[in-house]
Image 1 (cartoon, rainbow, N blue to C red):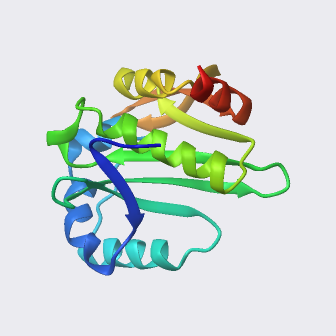
Image 2 (cartoon, rainbow, N blue to C red):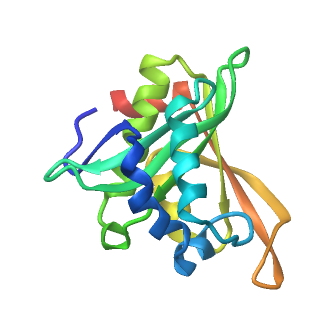
Length: 178
């Protein structure tokens, strides 16, 4: 897949200096599953180091093609090799690139890698019901809504539903051929 805006790369040790600002951004936390917790630079540095050496999950940096600026993360966790499936996560942490196509391209690049290179059969994602932009991004990329998980996330003093989305390799390749 050719991308106009972004490319994916492995994390580098110094990425934590950028990603720590995203972890401590209340607006970003409001869009993610789970409650906010405070993250120190040391904690974030270890998370990046763990991502670098993690051979069981796929965790990648999203960077701008124009200048290499690190703007987000994408990945696949909970990988089940027997059933060739995993859980997708995406975060465009640099808010200057929200609603500008960077998330869509990042997801498309990750799907291309997962289905063409790693032979996944199915990818899944959970998105907060209120995060309409993310739900639309997944749907634009061919994902189907499979249901709603009621009151699975407690944050900001109330319970939130999550939307369960998925895409199969057959859906992906049909979309590529049309």
